[in-house]
Image (cartoon, rainbow over all chains, first blue to last red):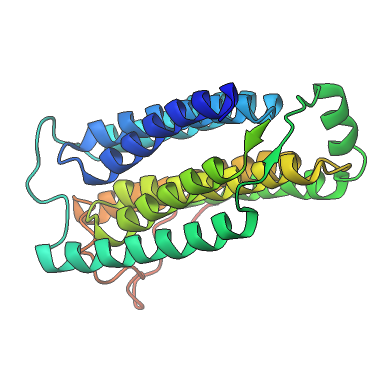
Length: 168
Length: 116
């Protein structure tokens, strides 16, 4: 157990606990806030794994934009403050969902952990220059296609929200 | 040196939480939160394996950035749909919303581009 392992364990406890709280809490806005904690702890995990640019992008885009959009949506759909009793389906549905989720997590965890066993890998922090050379070198075509995807998402969101209003 | 089992176990737990959130929640925005957790679990797996295999092309980290970008685009469109659902129905309870398509005999109400 190296130092990085211990740090990673601490952050992963935070991430796992806030993820479980985000999907089980009875308060609507708290779920978005627990998601913030999860994503922040995951950014710390990426830092421990040496992926500095990914951690930066995670904080900037996920925590800074996606969660803000989620909170906007909660406000615009009149999310109630305080506990709401009807946020989940019936208890049978919840039991089936829990069985499915535990089975999926167990399957994924077993496959992945038995694939690597107790191997350890040296952590080398990749400088942004190397990542940029790769991003604009080998991966430039998906990068450009992604800009088209963002444009399509923007146009789609505009078209969708312009419907549903009465024409003047 | 980091043991690779820890990030992968965390990714499995996050994936399980995300799947539970998608299956069990009634509010559309909470389902979206579940899908974000699932995407983050996948991101963690590919960054871990990028570290394990010392990829010369840094494929894991670049793909992780791409996944974050795609998730942002997905959240944009998904929340536009949620807002539209709220405007039509007054709530975003997925149990009560059984019919998402527009009615066939009514043209969609667009406010741009002149008369329909």
